[in-house]
Image 1 (cartoon, rainbow, N blue to C red):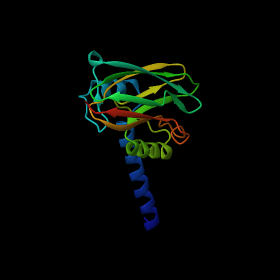
Image 2 (image 1 turned 90 degrees about the horizontal axis):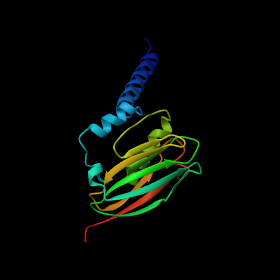
Image 3 (image 1 turned 120 degrees about the vertical axis):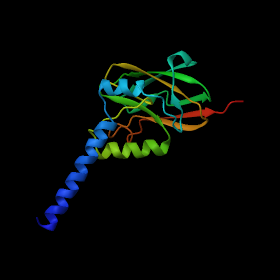
Image 4 (image 1 turned 30 degrees about the horizontal axis):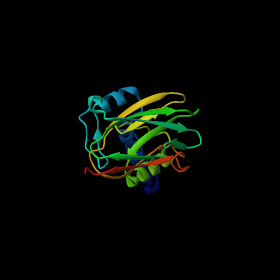
Length: 169
């Protein structure tokens, strides 16, 4: 096999392996959502999956085809467990993903490169047109965090918001 053919086959094999890994780790299917919720909650820089029994506040967030969230700024207190009621009032799929700006920037760049990539985690809600989903999250760390729609092009169009979590007094 020629060197150029070998290099091509190697690059193709690496790309295929990356797609397979991403597909397993980032599934949109309902079974993946159930698995993400059934798994042991994992601590992140922006908090941890919350229990419905611990909800101390409900926040409704509307997703719009103007590539905006309403509201797009939230002020919370450390220790709050929030039930997000996420309503997609648009005609296309949107999602709400909570994270740090750095994590969301990185994930958005990956989604732009691989627009068909799917993902699921306890801090994400994928909401079809006209549908409503819930996400429960405990903000056990103070700081400035973000939420965004990471569907290719949505984040780049400005579909993001801010969460400020103030420490315990």
